Length: 112
Image 1: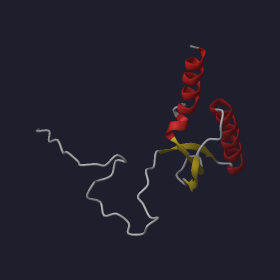
Image 2 (image 1 turned 90 degrees about the vertical axis):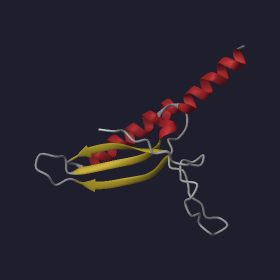
Image 3 (image 1 turned 30 degrees about the vertical axis):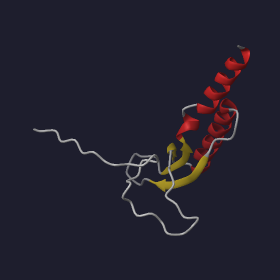
C-alpha cells in the first residue's frame, strides 16, 4: 500500500485559493471555527434546560457570553436511543478557553 500526499493550496482561512469568490461587494466566504455541543434526551424541555445550565456555567467560566452561531434540533427514532438531539454550534476558541487564557496572560503581564 503506497501513501500519497496531496498538497492543497489554501489561503489563510483554509479554503482553496482557486475557489471562485462571490461577486458582491459585501459577499464573502467566511471561516467557520465552530464546534457542536450536544444534549440528548427523550424529554426536549430537559435537554433545553441542561443546555441553558451549561451555557450559564460556561459563560461564568469564560467571563463573557459564549459565541453560539446556531441551535440544531434533530431526532433519532432508533430503538433504545434518546429521541431528541439538541446541538449548540459554539466557537471552538471559546470552548478552548482562549478568552480565559488571554485575560490570564494580560494579568500576568501587568503584574510584571
